[in-house]
Image 1 (spheres, rainbow, N blue to C red):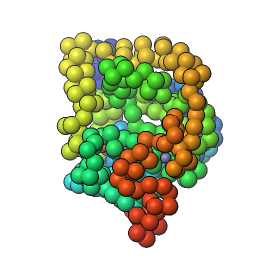
Image 2 (spheres, rainbow, N blue to C red; image 1 turned 60 degrees about the vertical axis):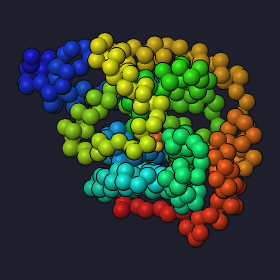
Image 3 (spheres, helix red, strand yellow; image 1 turned 30 degrees about the horizontal axis):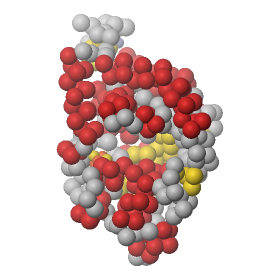
Length: 325
Ligand code: SF4
Ligand code: ZN
Ligand code: ZN
C-alpha cells in the first residue's frame, strides 16, 4: 500500500489504517501537535516554557517541536529542566542524551537531583522506606518540577506525556476509584488556578506512543528506549501491558478511552473545583489538599523535615544548576 497523500513508499500506518510516507508522516505529526496546542489553548502568544525532560524520546520530541516553533516565532522562550532521581544504571545515561540534545541545539538545560535537594537519592530512599519506588519518585519529582519551574520563571511546564500515558492514567484511576485524581488529568492540568502551581501542558496528548517513537526515529532524536529498573514493580506497567494487548486486538481502544474521557472531563473539573479547598503545606508552603503535602510526608519518614533541615542535609550543595553540559 502506498502513502495516502503522495503514493510514495509508506513508513507508518495510522490507527485509521491509512499509510503515510516519511515526509507526509512528519508533516502529519507536527500539524497534529500544533493543532493540539491550539484547540486546547495550551500555550499563549508569549510564554516562557520550561520543558520537563527525562532524556527519553517523548520529552525530547516535545522539546524539539516547541524549540523549533520558538525559533521561528520568537515570542516563546523554551528552556529544559531535568530531575536526576538517582537511579543507578538508568538515569545517568538518559541525562547524557538530554545534555547532548540540548547542547547541539543551544537549549539551556537545568538539572536538579533528589540527592542535592532532599539529601538522598531514590535508590537510598527505597532502601530506607517501605514504599513502592514509583510512589516516592512520582511525588517528589512532581514537587521538584513545580518548584523549580516556578523558580525558573516558567509560565507553563510542558511534558512529554502521550496518548498511551493518558489512557493508562485514566484506567488506573478508574480501577483504584481515584476519580478526583482524574479531574487533574487532561491536556492542561489543574482544577484551581493558583500562582504557585505552574500549569502543565501536554502537547503530545493526542499522539500515540508508536507515533512518537516513529517521529523520534525519523528525526534522529536519540532518546534511549531503556526502561527504569523499578518499572517492573509498577501498577502502571501492568495497566500498560493490558492496554497494549487490548489495542492489538481492538485497534483504536486507547484513542476511545482518551476521547471519551475528554467528553466528561469538563464535568469532573467543575465538580471538583467546587469541592476542592486549596491549602498550603505547613512544612514547605506549597499548595496541597491536606495539612502537609505528599512530598513532605515522604521526607518526614526519611527524617528530612522542613526547608531548613533539607538544606542542612544538602551538605554545602548550592542547588546545582548545570547549563548545556
Ligand atoms: Fe520513577 Fe517509577 Fe518511573 Fe522509575 S518507573 S522513573 S521509579 S516513576
Ligand atoms: Zn506521502
Ligand atoms: Zn510540603
